[in-house]
Length: 128
Image (cartoon, rainbow, N blue to C red; front, top):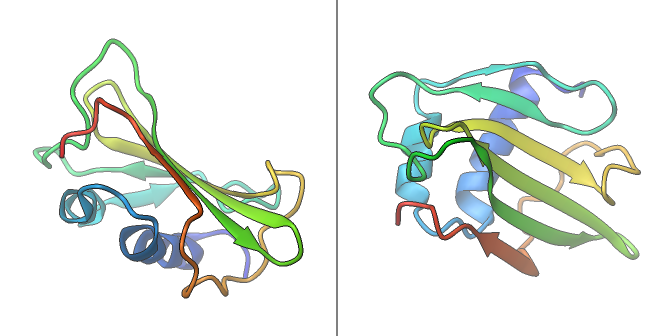
């Protein structure tokens, strides 16, 4: 399946359920009614997220946005799936990056529903 709205919806559900985000309810609120755009076609499954105005933010406001959460999963023989969530300066989710092996391998068709992350990193700026 190519990267697009259906693939983004799969990753939305996976991120909420499997990534160990410290406040999954707030993350689900960010995704509720959000639009997905700018689907990368390099082989990763990254995409932009446009959150509806008035949605409670994930992180505190800052001068600039950036990555606020990362989860890494072991896949296959020595492979790794990496998921990063980025926010804009208002603290709203604005990008989901999904890559394999530091973006050196394409992301295969999703089969990761039973995985648990072996490493999770959350910014101190998240609202938990």
